[in-house]
Image 1 (cartoon, rainbow, N blue to C red):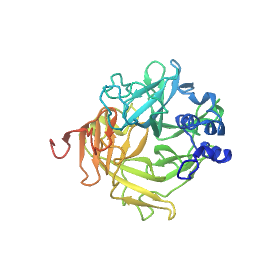
Image 2 (cartoon, helix red, strand yellow):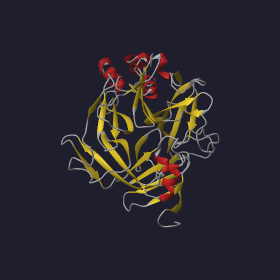
Image 3 (cartoon, rainbow, N blue to C red):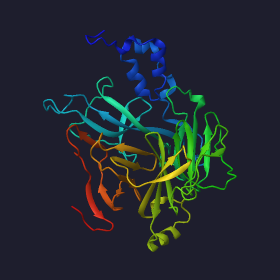
Length: 399
């Protein structure tokens, strides 16, 4: 017991420690929990041996020549301890990095670009060379999954992939993979299946996005209605359309994104321009699957689901939060906790993963940015790595 009379956390009853530990669903969090002390270590078992199961091979209808591999990455905030640096600088301030990490089949961590799958080969001088999980605080923001050929990159015709259950305590034979394919249909593969199952949707819906929300697989259709997918691969309506319940918008955009913030579910409605040149390009690309990147975004509207009232409410401001919409995952970041980006904004990609844009909910402007592969902020500074502004679509060049 310390001089203040408070008992240490290690004195908690084993059953309480076990309840706390079993609520952790990330492998890194479990390892950090068990390394705190002997009481913590013996309160929960180590992660399952197959928890580092990614990447692994799964069947696919287009894989007659090459194997299809399921990869997992995690967007994380990495916080350095005070005085930690490999650059030789005396007592640097504590800093936070927003990074994407991917574990290889050999168990080593690789750093990936936030908006693409490009591996980062050259690290900044002050980025830690060795990451000790006991010294560095690593907070997982979200996970992303993707299907790639073993020899030729991303499998075409698949918009997005999620895995459920995706908890550290899940056995491999419980794992299910869900995806939205090129025509907006849903596909599912359960571990051990020889083929994918495609949903014969009795509602005739076309789906835009898919996430795991509160442990359940959710999809949003083209009207902004959200549906749950149960264990039998059937859909159940979870929310009304954003434009049909009287609490949302009066019209619907072209593409919907799902984002979770503070336990609430958001739909980000994305509007494409009527640029004639874009339509001509689309007409020449009928043999390619539809992809939002073929159209230029000119507006966003954001809605939050009020689950108590069963209605959508339009969100006029995100405050200090920023939404990130990438091809394989979407998530929210607090700019108070992590500098380097602007609050009340939506960061997104269009034609290529290397072209990042920012939409401001305050003035509805869209600017192209030279965006870094990761974000860094230092305690005591509000903005260290603000992306450099490029020409705005409506305002020309900005300083």
